[in-house]
Length: 458
Image (cartoon, rainbow, N blue to C red; front, side, top):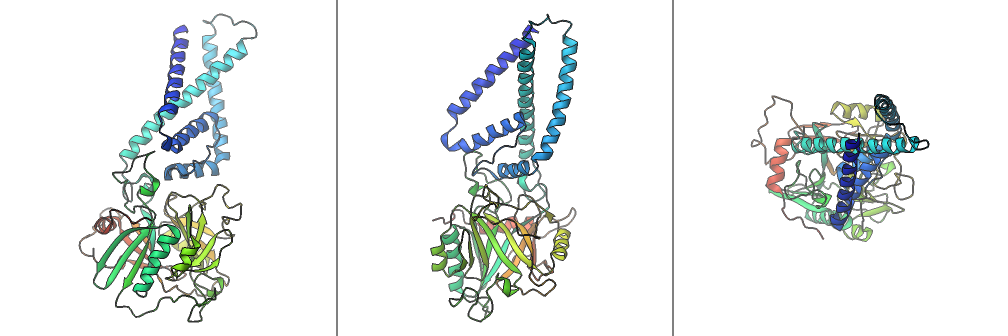
């Protein structure tokens, strides 16, 4: 028994020394990661939800959301674990009581409490270390359904972004500047095929793998893989004016039709929602944006006709969701579920989770769906006139899904590498929203060959 106590004392001393060295040696710019680790240890040891680390990884942010949402059920499970732990401790004490000397009166409860606490904390730490080692091993050897990112290992498809058509070079230039200067998006990829110029913009690399230069606790999550993108497509031979900027009236454009996204337009695309650390309304207006709401958040019609909602907040990928006006939410929900989408918890980008003027709550009677809890999703909103045919936003060419073909399916990545993205496989949802599909093999090839190695970030 004496040797056991000495062994425990050595372990306690070692853990204390490691903790002190951790605090002294961890670089200042890694405090967010250190905080996340320490909060995780405390949450497991004390059976309380860990606070969300501000500006940490996608995995940490999602784990925080999950823990926060299910804290009640976790508490119930913890109570069961405590009961089982107490019963096993009682059995051990009973078996050891015959060999231990009688305790001094008044010391039994204190010594028992200290011993039990030390054992519980030690068991929690040892269990966590084992689980952490296993999780690291699993991540390194992950065979994700879509790419190799561990965040997407739970799904065989990802909503990767949205494709927008622009009418001319001027509108193309304005749209790029609008996203770049107004929301701090990066220029990710470009290519020219015949008369078509493709430009992809987003907040970080699109590749479905961890970039080789990315380092945990050191690199920014803006340099991590799996980001969604806005694909801007310009065809020099087009003669169709997809959208013309408003004439000063926030609800009307030059043709006299209601602006896209407005409730009276009956447009199928409500808005693309971005959760960004900052945005600049002056730059949106300068580059052709038409702002129609600026109280707490910003709602603006982009130069291409895509409605955008901007919220000041923090997200691993600021492209949060695409909101769709539906003639029937139930019908649209069934449609997207057939495509592999699952109802998920509504995403927020601020700590108060919709309880203030700077981030709206999830709209009533809406449904949020996504292929994975870590990917961008669609928010289904009921249109004012249920059952009425929705007007397709002419500037929105498609929502883009990257998928892993079923086993045995052969995809020829060379046959259509230069074709329009998603044109080979496309469906239309019940509210006239086009959905384009691209295999992961073809997506990765296109992403590698069109990538701009040094994104233009101002």
